[in-house]
Amino acid sequence: MNTNIPNTQPKKETGMRSLDQALRPESWTEYIGQPTIKENLRILLSAAKGRGHQPEHVLLYGPPGLGKTTLAHLITKEIGSSLRATSGPAIERVGDLASILTNLSPGDVLFIDEIHRLNRNIEEILYPALEAGVLDIIIGKGPAARTVQLELPPFTLIAATTRISMLSAPLRSRFSGGTFRLAYYSHEEIAEILRRSARILNIEADQDAFMEIARRSRATPRTANYLLKRARDFADVNQEPLSVKTIKKALALLEIDEIGLNQTDRDILSTIIDKFHGGPVGLKSIAATLSEEEATIEEVHEPYLMQIGLIERTPRGRVVTSQGYTHIGYDVPESAQGKLV
Image (tube, rainbow, N blue to C red; front, side):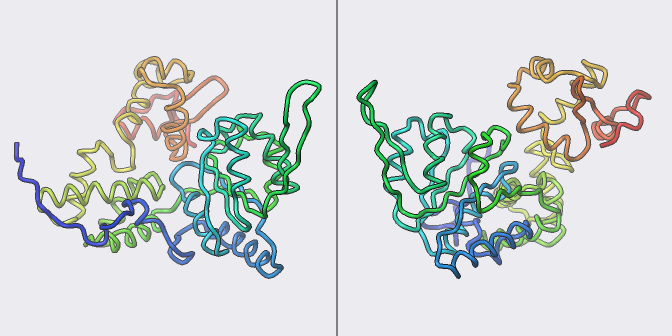
């Protein structure tokens, strides 16, 4: 085994910022994609600024890695404020949220990631805070209990979730600034994001190389940047140029195929075909056969397989489509003919 690791010094990657932070867009012009959301936010922020008001609360939802956190940073920068970030799982008690809200400064932006994981009792504390700008605190217990109402400074809540259906209707209705769904990106948009990332990371590659990664990125910027960094590592260690050929070898080592499927994705398809005759089959049976968690299959793997038309979800369970059979090299049976998404 060769233990001679090249002693290469990073260029723009020095300092305290992580690579992911370094690659995060710092202006609206650097944020590629989501044009409708950007325009709606531009109008919302411009109108609030013109009236001298705090921007209203915003809810962002969609699959992981599409730029929800980045939008929160850009909104904060646009209004010249400070961002206070936390997440649903980190807020364990009512007192945790009360402490966060009472320590906000006027004009702050509070970003809560994974807000769908907030406890319902904690969620109810947000209702008056978002609607009336007050915090209701109960002091004491039993007959002696009384409610104290604290005025909160003006603030904007930006919430992000990958599972909007898990938010209660009362909470969703209080995002008066708008609820926006982030869409998957096109290959061209991903390639443009990769060109910017390559400049920051001092990577030299041609357009074909960026498109090769884009096709395997699952239409997600975070995944695209991850693959770019791993391909860069492979090229550096093996002293190869970052060409299409090198990228194919690097991603083959990661078991990422030409449309972005990993080994578990392919195992799901082959399991449904081999063990359950192409489906329909329930999620519980698939998970048990693969020794995988149901939530992992449903939230990580299944959305992309459905998006690109390799499986479909029916009332009776999951079914592999004719494209799914073809992609992993199986003959398409008559029962799957015409099962296209």
